[in-house]
Length: 388
Ligand SMILES: Nc1ncnc2c1ncn2[C@@H]1O[C@H](COP(=O)(O)OP(=O)(O)O)[C@@H](O)[C@H]1O
Ligand SMILES: [Mg+2]
Image 1 (cartoon, rainbow, N blue to C red):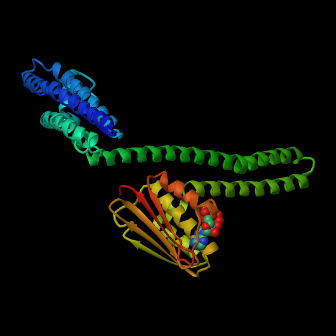
Image 2 (cartoon, protein in one colour):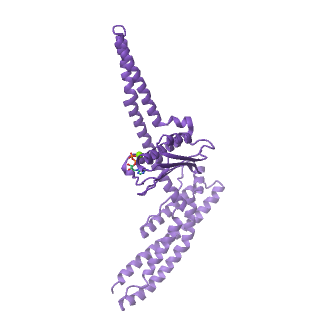
């Protein structure tokens, strides 16, 4: 009888799924009584110790069901519970406050009904199917007709359990957000480390080297002072040059950390200064960015570097005569938009400026949108979340 063995086996597997499901339903239903019972006792403080344990047991049953459904459908159901820890009162509070507890209970009540119902339906279909498909496949040599319905019933069981036991959509978004924040925090730590190393290198190679040379010159000049005053003067002249260079180096390093112009003139003033020095015709528009206080220093510095890079790119690569910078304050933070009228085709893999911009912004949990079709124009929009 072609197909019938296969059909019976498939239906048998589905039936087994339903049988186990119904068994879970019956066993777990005892929990409703147990949980209610201990909840009442908890109110009277007598049985408080049992409640967290009962909730943990309930979680195990629900976990078993999640695994079972995961195996049947081939898709895991993620699990999310509040951890129960600390003194008893705390654990009782956590157990009752965890939405997971109520989700499990809701599933448990519903599953008692549909688990048993689907099992009855499955048994009935299986018996009918065994007879009908026996004739259908055996005599008429057609594929099984009724037995596969048992599998569909098991599918229904799995789908309902999944809907009831899966995390709420909000929780899923939250989990994704946590992952994102973890990544951006790791990025921030890495960026911070890289920044420290860069500053250390700049100071070491620049100002420090010049100060060492300066100190040597002064030592030589002191020794030459009595015997050869002319040589001493020359050495002191050199030393003065060196001191000025060291100062310039230091200014450069400081500018790279937090541009002093931000402190002096604020973000809008600093951006206007950038625009004026860019060699392009740059219009700066600010929508009340500094009306109600200033953004955090790190955000202002990032915004400043974004504008500096984007405007430099517009001048260097776009070929257009004009650009526009818009700074705006939004509910989420600060947005920066730089647009030019040039040829477009900006490519992050073509240099380090745009990539550096993206990293700096990502470290503050912000995001960069770059639109630069060939033929232009190039628009860079950056969002920097912050509290004002
Ligand atoms: N505004 C722009 N208009 C046209 N091309 C651009 C623009 N900005 C960047 N590009 C292109 O993208 C590449 C990468 O930019 P970037 O990462 O800033 O590197 P860099 O400026 O150091 O070359 C540039 O080399 C340039 O070819
Ligand atoms: Mg660049």
